[in-house]
Length: 169
Image 1 (cartoon, rainbow, N blue to C red):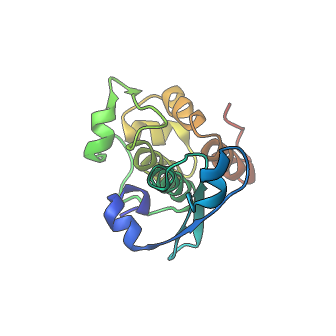
Image 2: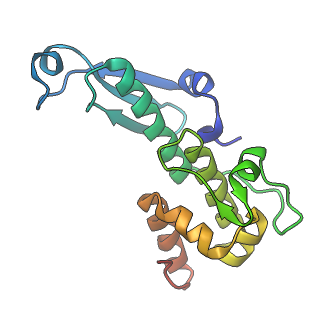
């Protein structure tokens, strides 16, 4: 199971949280209270940080979301089978209707969907047509979905370039 798909409680068990102060706008609360949160996923060493909110609780939630997105981009899990006969996750099926992927990039489901799409693209050896068919969407919808997270699109394009494939726009 991909770490980006884990429930928050399970994911935080594998993480180290550090609370610090940050300078900048925000007045006395920001400068004197440890509201900034740095989250490190211990098994992978991937970190994420949030310090733009006044509340430590809000910054913790934002940092964990950012960590899940970073994990979705950086870590790959094996895909068992490819093609139209593959059964995608229930989450993916609920968000992909009629070949269209429907999710906001700030929604809690986004990191898990991103991880599943990237795992499928890697499993299809970067053949977008095969990956899209496997996921039950169109190639253009898959590219639009990747464009929601520029780092994911950049990672796919970097791997495609090493294989001599054209860049996705």
